[in-house]
Image (cartoon, rainbow, N blue to C red):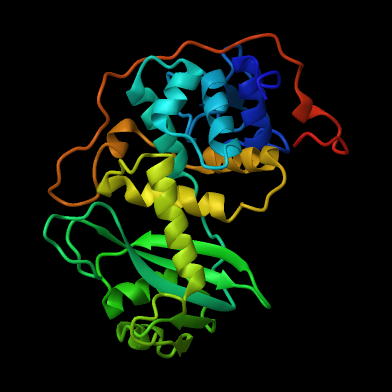
Length: 333
């Protein structure tokens, strides 16, 4: 990877190849007629608008060299369990922890593809609690000091699991569960749940509902898929991120886990990297001020310790531009 994206110019060309695979397209008038200026930007013949390849993407107005960005994206995509901000800072020699943290959060912000397909077929659905345990509090759906997370996962016939979806929900009421199902499960699918009464109304008229009630002290064996995903999520948070997840940023980490889980069978890390770059180029800019604000009204700003800084470029001698090779060449290896 480092030989491919050895210079910032190569990285910029790769982004251009992804953003405009059939040639330049003006974001203002959608004209295909334009040329490259001396500063690297493109000028539209139709409207005269000047635009850079990174404009209106995750990389918009970044002060971090693209060689550093691409190395971070490769580590993010290629590592099975992901990478923490501290590990990224140490691996790439980034002087500021804050810079490494914000880079990873920007990548997490773009992992949900607009218009992605809904889950279908037989779907297991349940909730789990993620976060610290408040002293003196009991467990259960209303436990304090934790975040309630809804999980849905496809069941394969005769065995195995398909794609999953996860989202933090305010509570386990009928309204909250109905909203989660509407945003993640195809109408007409079969929803398999435990005996929680709210699911009966949440699925009424839209989904086929299969309800199972576990015998006394039997344990959570009736929903193995959901409990497997919940266990893997908590283990991943405790392992890669040492459990230090701020409640306000939990949805981003859930999106990252879902992104990795749904691509767990991919044999090519290069294709996962390619998909990540597609999502990054197609996403609107994410500013640092947006990352440090928690979505909870009235809450304080949450941001990592340390000061921000500009990393040094990782430029070196490269091998040209393999992505510009003929279509029959396998560039994704």
